[in-house]
Length: 78
Image (cartoon, rainbow, N blue to C red; front, top):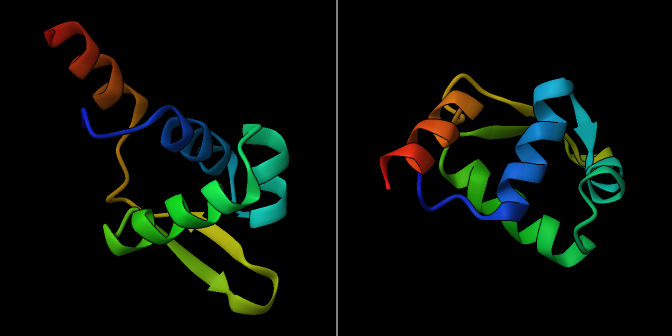
């Protein structure tokens, strides 16, 4: 999971808490709206998240998303 950016980690942390709109993710992750949008699109393409309500941009995490144990394991390997 070494290709996770700090923004990805922040977004995934928010989504691990439960479903969230893009606006909520922006406010909780402290990342720009444009960057969140771009990262959400990438994570959706990877199968880590899914947009469950297009009109409100409501997102949820999938079982394919990396866990924070995965992230911690990659950091200790270096």
